[in-house]
Image (cartoon, rainbow, N blue to C red):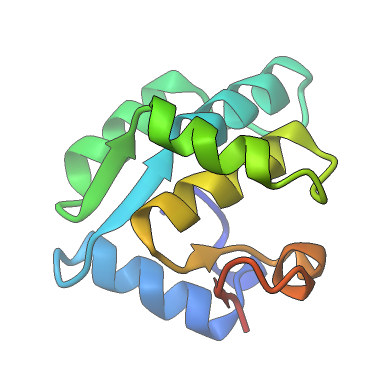
Length: 118
């Protein structure tokens, strides 16, 4: 697990455990990876590319989602989300018709995507 389990909501923790065990699949959008790398660069987190590579290798259900034009079609329609990373991440979730694992209440409040956390 890339983050401290005690910082996760119970539903988020359960979802991640299922992915790590290979019982479920989770997609990590390119925008999430880019944001992680920027946060590492700023010294706000310790996770970088080596840890991400290891996570993708070790968790059977973890998948990388490249950014494509269909996600960008969603992106241009989501003008109500100001943060560009949030907008790309919600676009990816909507493109996959998937729930979004996040503690960001503002994304849940948009009603644009189902969220998983507590």
